[in-house]
Length: 171
Image (tube, rainbow, N blue to C red; front, side, top):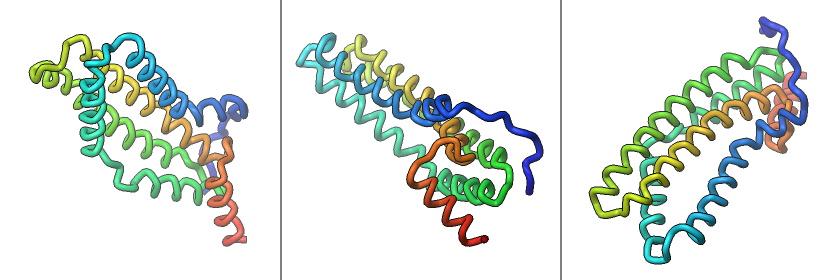
């Protein structure tokens, strides 16, 4: 199947930036974590912060992709290697990630009142909202990186091996 519309070429710099945007968000949150712990949160409250991060991680276990995202990526790589269009795969992955991430962010934000009711200082509640917002930012960056990867605008060892193996099998 040939692409139905002519795609505009993204610059390689934008491709690299968008592909690594999710990693940049994670590093930004790690820096915020260190700044919060060392400057604004007293030593006695470190345990509260770690408890919040643990609860958020536990909530994350309720929203797995079950390998569906990997299957979509594999099919997109095969389609692109065969000269096909990847837009439908991009759309499917975007829908999956956005639905899971929005649900995860809502569940995470709902955790703040529960934590306050159990004695966590109200000043730490915004951390829950920051973690939920970080998840939302990652939800936007992940599909963009996937799209650029699937059309070979960013080269990773995995994408190179996957796409080249498919091409040599069909030559």
